[in-house]
Image 1 (cartoon, rainbow, N blue to C red):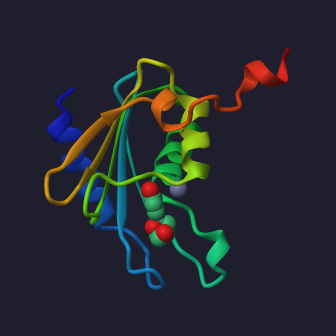
Image 2: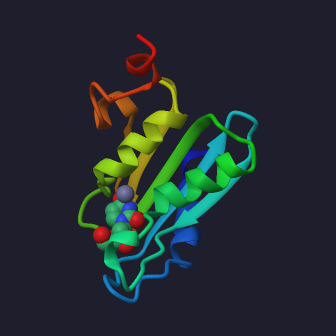
Image 3: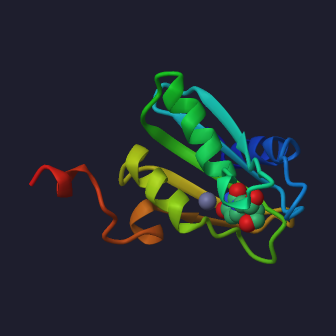
Length: 132
Ligand SMILES: O=c1ccn([C@H]2C[C@H](O)[C@@H](CO)O2)c(=O)[nH]1
Ligand SMILES: [Zn+2]
């Protein structure tokens, strides 16, 4: 898997964003452990709180197709530096990734930050907490 390619897929996904309210388009692309690609964009609503971020759109598409482990994920927005996923998305990414999952935060200027779930959400709540 090439990082550049995955980021390009996220840029492509971003073009589908439904953002009449914020006008802020975000795209996400993820590869699962079976090397399947899923794309997502943000989908807003007149009832603002119902908005689904690009990251969660891509993840829910993957999970609803039977893919539950993210190998790599790219997220792109028109931000000054690499985009910063919201807290809700960080928790949802945590559910379906592992410590090896590569997460690429990017923008349209070519800035890329490679990170991990432990950096994005240290001490995240997980199934381990529930089953103790
Ligand atoms: O990482 C992010 C940050 C924001 N948004 C969306 C939510 C909303 O539609 C718009 C502005 O917050 O951007 C995402 O999809 N992903
Ligand atoms: Zn989010």
